[in-house]
Length: 273
Image 1 (tube, rainbow, N blue to C red):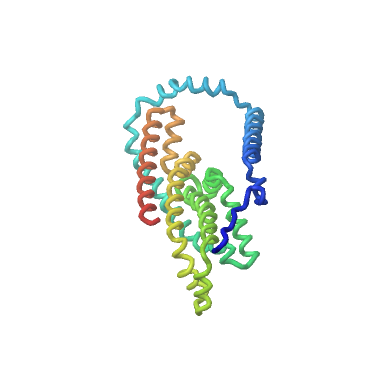
Image 2: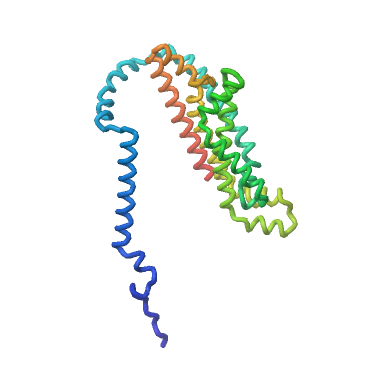
C-alpha cells in the first residue's frame, strides 16, 4: 500500500510570506498612493483646474452654433482631397512595408548576430520613431515645397519607425528551432529565414501593416495642416476663412472614411489571424 504524499502547509512554503493577503494589499495600496501623489503633483505643476474644465464644457454651445448647419457645397472638393489623402497613405504604407522587411531582420537580435549592425539599426529606428509626424512634415515640406510629395516622404519615415519596432519584436519572439533545423540540413541563411521565420510572423506582419495604414490615414490629415497636401490642407483653409460649416462637413467625411477603413482592415485581420 503506497503512502500518500502530504501537502505542504503554508508554513512550509518559502514563498507564502510574499503571497500573504496583507502584503499584497499593502503593495497595491502603496502603488495606488504613489499614482495619486504623482497625479496631484502633475496637476499642480501644469495648473490643471477642474472648475475651468467644467466651465469650458458649458461653452460647447458656442462652438456647435458655428459648426452647424454643415455646408454641403464643400463636399466635392473634400472628396477630391480625400482621395489624395488616401493615395498618400497607400504609397507611404506600401513602401514602408517593403523597406521594413530587411530593416526588421537587421533589428532582431536572433537574426542579426553582429552587435554593431544590430544596435545601429535599432538606434536609427528609435530616432525616426521619436520624431513626430508633424515635425517630419514640416521638415520635408521645407525641403520639397508645399504639396503631397513632402507629406508622402514624412508618412514613409513615420511608418518605417513604427513598423520596424513592431515587426522586429515579432521576429525576436519567433521559434528559432525550425531555422536551426534547416541550417543543419544545408539551407542557407535566406532560405532558413524565408521558410523558418516568415511563416511565423506573416500574420502579425500583415496585421501591423494594416494598422499602420490606418494610422497614416489619420496622420495625413494632421500633416496636411502644415501644407503637406490632402484633406488636411483643405481643412486648414476653411479654418482660416472661418467657414465652420465646411469644417464640420470635412470632419464628417474624415470620420466616415476612417470608420470604413477600420472595418475593412478589421475583417482582413480576422481572416488572416
